[in-house]
Image (tube, rainbow, N blue to C red):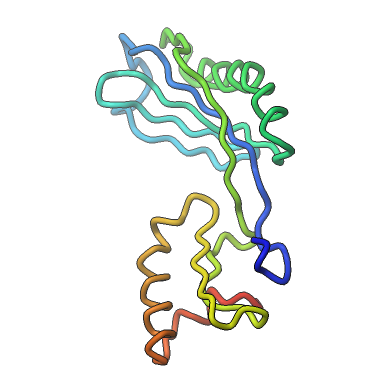
Length: 160
């Protein structure tokens, strides 16, 4: 982001764990993906071999060592929230971790060039949406190189 004239995204620390394989999914309808939109959010899903993957409890990023010191506390909070939702499921945490991602104010990617670096083309898909925006970015950048109009380009411009 050092090439950009202003900060376009903020860094967030997120936390997750995977459980030991669950014996029962009592109360978890069809082991469906759950994504709670509260803040801090919670997401749950299962893997093919039976463990639960639980994540969320995001906080603003400071630095990696600080983020990593929060892993035990955030894991306990995530496990407690899981147990509130599914009190009949015996959950045992196997492995937990933390990571950092970036998000924009409006949730959209930034795609295109900036005045200070007109020959650079950026495709910045923040917030975990980079796969979604990958095809759009490829089309916008292709059209900019070929000097063709692209109706979607205005949605992802840097001066929005």
